[in-house]
Length: 111
Length: 113
Image (cartoon, rainbow over all chains, first blue to last red; front, side, top):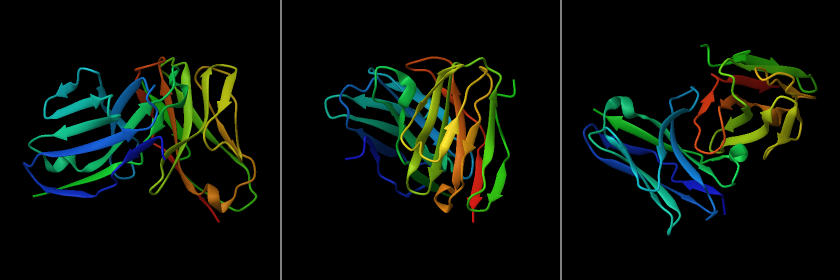
């Protein structure tokens, strides 16, 4: 089993829709969690951190479910500019030296 | 601040050639890492460093060497290029341990023929 797993998609949704992705992780001792966004042929950039209490930033909401070992990302009122690949990032160790990236979920927003 | 810079942006090598991918950051970050990204595989850690003079292997270190003589620079050396090393290489840096954001360079697209 991979340490971090994501549905590769693509998710193809109309503008204005709400879309959600999940990411599962295998190590129950994982300490910190993030969502990164990667545009085509560009470097990944931090979208948001995921805290135990959840995290909301405008149209984006991230949640952590430790019992079931997954994190989620919800995008409300999706925009064309949200089209990208969303990478789940998990730190499975007490030190952040070897953080693990999921292979990403592709999202395409259509007009 | 330039952030994380990488050179070159593109490179084509023949099998067996060696070369060094350069990475530099001007944020005084302790942690630096090299990743490769292949279609459907996500980002895989090659080598990382937690400070000047300290390096360690990641998930896929074979065929690559690194050194960290200064805080700013973290070059990645391909010893004898192979077609399996065709990939996009990203360098990243981070200011601290748990919970800190990673900043990525723009990447180097390497093709080995």
